[in-house]
Amino acid sequence: MSQTDQRESIDRRVWRWAIVGAIVLVVFFTTYQLTAASGQDTVSTSGQEATQAAYTGDGAVAASADGGCACCGTSSSEPVEGFTADAGGVQVVDVDVSDGFAPNVIRAKAGVPMEITFGQGSGCMAEVMSADLGFYEDLQSGPRTIALPALQPGEYGFSCGMEMVFGSIVVE
Image 1 (cartoon, helix red, strand yellow):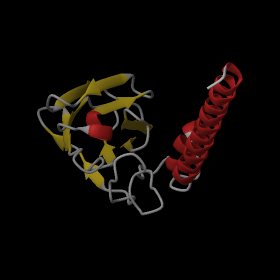
Image 2: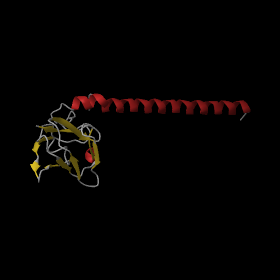
Image 3: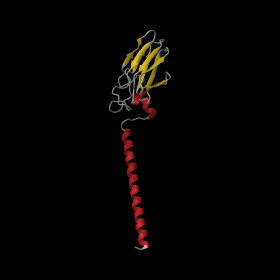
Image 4: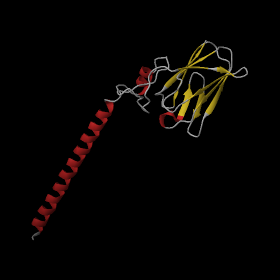
């Protein structure tokens, strides 16, 4: 084989690999775009818009197209009311977090301290927080009790750590 034939053979191999590489890149980016586009069909809004759209102020849980929470699949978007019980001058309430917040609307009396015990959570429900009341708790290792001072009448929100599942404390 002459030197010219060897160069042509090498040139053909280089072009073949360049074409194969280009095809691989086109397939990768096309697949990526299709995957990203299909993910947008599940939740119509994102980021801050999703948080604002999901929280209506009535303690409702954010819902996806199938009726469940967009992040953890909780099944109920209906308000579930709970009332505090008096325990020696402190209002107490337990909140189950195994399938969203239950209750997700807590009714309390103004001017009386309160303790809310959130059960152990995982996934989306592994954290609970409230910008209104200034608390954040990790629920992965077990239940956590949040002690709140006597509150003024009003509505105070709380959410999961991803801000996709919401609840409220209505103080009257």
